Structure formats: C-alpha cells, structure tokens
Image 1 (tube, one colour):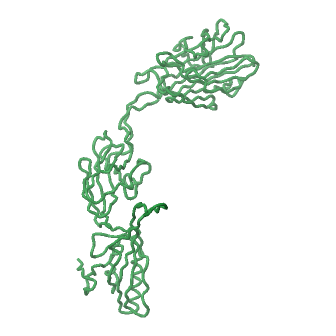
Image 2 (image 1 turned 90 degrees about the horizontal axis):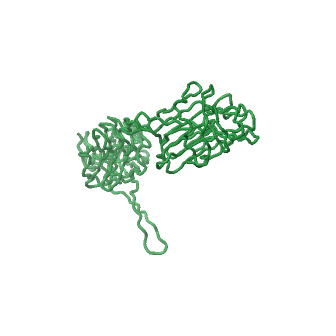
Length: 510
C-alpha cells in the first residue's frame, strides 16, 4: 500500500507524491527511476462556452445554452538520473509509457476517479544536464471524470429507484434478461423519456391466417362437373340480359360447351357454378383468396365469336353480387382480335387485346393460358398468361367474402362459336383460414437485451442489433441526473415470467 506525501516533502522508496499520475494503469514513479511528479494543473475547473444569438434590433443577446469545453491537464515533473545513459533510458521509457491514446488517467490523491485523455506534448529537456524539470500536457476531449467503480442497481417491482450522487449527468446501460418469451421491453423515466426495444403489438399466440385449397378440379382428367350447378350463375348488371341455357360437357380439353340450346337475340349459353366449401375451421367464404384457371381457346376463322366469363361471387349487403371477374371475348367482326376485361364490383377496371388465331400465345391449342384473380383485402390483382398483370384497390371491399365461383360460356345468334373454348384446371385457395398458432417472438428465454444510453445502441446477447429500437427513442435525454432517479420497466403483458432488469453506470463528476 502506498504512503502519499505532499509534493514538497521528501520521498521514500515506496512512497508516491500526492498528485502522482497513473497513465494507462501505470504510475510513472513506479516505472521510471528518478521520475517524480511536482504539481498538476487543469484538474479542477472546466471552461464553459456559452451559446447565444445576437439580435440586430435590441440590446443584449439571446441565451441558447452552454457546453463544457475539452480540458488540458498539465503535469510538472522532475527527472534526475545518475548518468547520461541512465537519463536517456529513463526519458525513452517515459515516451513509451505516454504513447497510448485515450487512456484512463487518475491521480494518487483521488484514486477513485479517472479522466480519459491523450498525451499531446512533452516539453524538451534542457541540454547538458541529467536533472530536469519538464511538463506533460494531456488533452481530454471529454472533460469529465468518472468513478473507477461501476455501480449496478436491480429493479424492484418493475422500477429502478436510486439516488445518484455524481455532480454531472451520466448515461447508464440498462439490461433486461428474459425469463420467458418477450415481444418488447421499454423504459420510462420520471420526465417521460422513453427507450423501447421490440414491438409492443407483438403477440405470443394469435389467430394467424393460413392458406387452404378449397377447390381443385382438373376437368381434363376427371369428371367434376357433377359438383357444379347448371345455369344459375349471378351475372353482372351489364350482362344481366344474357340468357343462361344449354349444357356443358367434359372432354380431354376440360369443361366446354355441349350445347348452346335455342338461339336468342341476346347472348346465350350455359353456365356452371360451384359453392366455395367450408374451410377447416368450418367457415364459408374467403375475404383473401387466390383463384386461377387454365383456358384453352382459339378460332379457326376470324368470323367466329364467343365469350367466357369467370366470376367470383359473394353476398354484399344481403344481395348476391359479383365481386370480381375476367371476361375473355372473341368478336365476330372479321378480325382475330379479341378483348379481355377485368371487373371489380361490376365496373370495368382494365381492357387488353389478344389474338384468337390458332396457336395464339394466350390460349392457343398447344397449351393453356393461366388466368388469375387474387383478392387481398381491398386489393385485386389480375393476370393472364403471366403478362397482363394489373392491380387495383376498391375501398370498402376488404371484408367482402367470396362464396361462389362461376363460368359462363355465351355466343351471339347466327354467329358460329370459336373452334375451342375449354376450361381445364380450376383452383381456389383461401388465405382467410383461422389458425391459432404460437408466434415466434423476438426475444427468447435467456436473451439479454442491453440498451447503451451513452452510445445509443442496442445489443442482444452482446451482438449489436439494428432496427429493434423505436424511431422516437430518447437516447440523448435518457440519463441519470444528480438526486433521486426513477425508471419504470415495461414488457409484454403476456410474458409468462417477468424479466430481470439491471442498470449499470459510472458516476460522472465536473
């Protein structure tokens, strides 16, 4: 143990001057023979800089604030050596010990506190002597001093309550050790400053929608027509005059017209409708769904004409309504050009053209073209042959549920139908099936979540994490101030066991 003496007193072999400096954990007196601290300046007061605004039209200035400037600590020392060689060795040793940057610096008369600094200047010794008095200048960009001891507090009943007796604010590190799964932790001080990590809305278990295939009918390979009803499809208002009649048959191409029946002045032909089955939870209807079918359609003559309409129907305000549909039409005007229409709630949203000649790229006889209607709440996505992708939103439709799918094949009087118009595969997937599942949570049992208020960073199990903190976190103002401090600890209310909260800090002094 050292015996501290005044700098004007006589040193014994194992004694240190009262202001002896430890630089990077080493007292220079203990490492350099003949070295002795004489005096130290710059430790006591810190220079303040006032920030103000100088108005042009009145007396005085507007006070904006203050800041503490960096400090320079000057150590005056004596170095006495018995020979030139001994002096040179001692001086080289001094240079080496002072070569480290941003190190802890403490003094023998205050061994429980340290500064952080870097040697910036060592005065040149006078020539021709082995006994010198010189100065060491140490620049402290951070002007404060810190307690050597690190203090730890543990929250009781979800709250830290501690009396901080430093003379300047300090930024602690707050840790939460999860004792069970967690979605978030949060800290709130007495002034309402908040640090939040994770998502307060995250659930432990929840009603998570999953996908189920409710219709899977491949007409070209199996006869599923018996599960579809005849000629009772709900039609959109602009085609309500079309007559549903005739019949449909199964062929190697799929579902196609067997007979259009008696010719009419309006368009006419058979329809097929299938109710969407109940899902595994027993619910009928899907507000979020993916409906797709494969169509094979072409005309050997430009004078042929026909239309096939695919519809998704549901009950809206007590009335059976076509929610979305695709119309694929080939006119009989002497051109192979046709139109494809996308409808939502009875209104046309998009029209594209296609060529109905044999081997056309859309629905040619060499293969089937896929047609898609996807409903995600109030967003509808249409595509044909993976090219004509179109999206639209219709407000108010997010809760409308599809309960039926229909196909309506129709033609005009005295105009021959196209050579082939067949629907092969019909698939309906629901994304609205209720499924109670355990939700993977952000934090697991044993995870240590650390908020470093000094650096404004978050780590989980000592690994830095980005994106876990809330955008509005009060990093700059979340600190301990002299006096009594209170910090509340919050966490997911569904957690099986409360986390353990600890707070570590070093006292800061002016």
